[in-house]
Image (cartoon, rainbow, N blue to C red):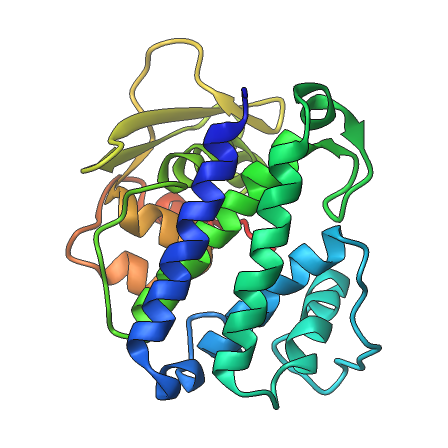
Length: 269
């Protein structure tokens, strides 16, 4: 089937999450992660919560007004599934994650290509299932690395999800440069990714909007960064200060413009 690669990728990541948290033992569930306010158990609760939502199972009502890390309605909705499971043993949440995930995979494998490509309402708005579950692959892959980091089990990037993550964040760069960082009209910015999935991305500002540059030209600013640091900053996993002071990041040209881009690079909600 056309979208088996997407289903296989999600299933691969879920199996790896299950393996890693079991390897860490009971204390691993309590480890804080790079997601503000969330432990490893909370990430499991978040991941299975989205699958329950797709199955039509809403969370119990929850008032997140006292949770400083909840910033918007989507965050409040996510938090409801998380809060519902905070008092449960970690391994119980893990088992629920595995069971709910297995049901989701079975449902996805029954879908036809026409169902995958039809536009329909979703928690992300009106999109095809391809877009929704590509986003699901992105979110889950990033959360896998949140768990790796929390459990001090850092592994090299790669596997299912990495290319989707980098491509999505590359696609967001015109918005970051033109709207969020608001670079001056006519300016050009270059982001050069090194290492795995290396690439060079030139963005120019035309009519107040960023766009992929259509003609050759030298940039006003260039940010040279390993792919792993790029996606972590775009995902909001590291601060602008950590990014800018890393010995692996090199800035050329207008440093003030570079700083504005880095400060506005985080694009995940």
